[in-house]
Image (cartoon, rainbow, N blue to C red):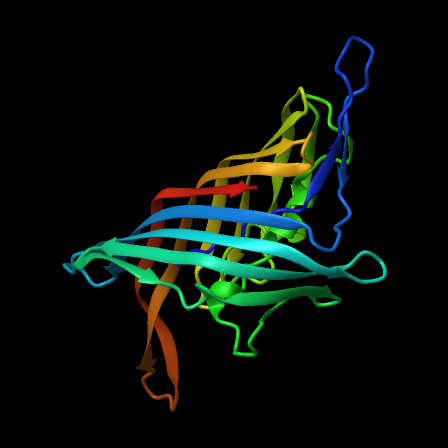
Length: 286
């Protein structure tokens, strides 16, 4: 299953009148303050086609489809800000649902175990840490909470001049956009200030991440179109939309005994391929 960690760094765009001689606004991260609140809604859809083929002649390919539609609604509050400006957040999940369907799977909607629970999020030398407020073990569905604080890494450095372009290295935004089970994906995103008009800033980005998962899948994640919208008057992002595709491939092997040898080796017997027919993520911030 694909999980996108989508995110928000509370951004302030220093607005300036756009008359003839005015410089473009500068994009600066807004320092968090205790009590700051952000309501987040994320919707994602991914439709997968999984194909397994055998190296043996005459064996037909086996294909099946899977579809996942996820929704997440939560509120984030800055609980405190330590020396140096490092905040601690409390995220309360109001709703977390996933609808599954596919080949031989009737549509079913399930409630995630993170629904109606709260989590404390901190940052340290090892990165972001998510812990259940009640002390329970942190479920996998909670691991992406608070990752939206990395949105600032998609923004231009300095002036947000319309048409300005820059690149973002994959390693800097792995919490925001990543391939599950790939610890260190490679690749870059090309970013551009698509528009900067009357206090509204839109950043367009596209690119590709590649890597090998812990289970041996050679995987590619392409973002065809990504748009991040900010309202500089309110000093906060408004929305994020991403469309793209994912492909993954892995050889199927089995243990076989070599003649005259007292050992077994892995021998390729087929291939499994995964590709998306639809991959969309939409997020709103209020």
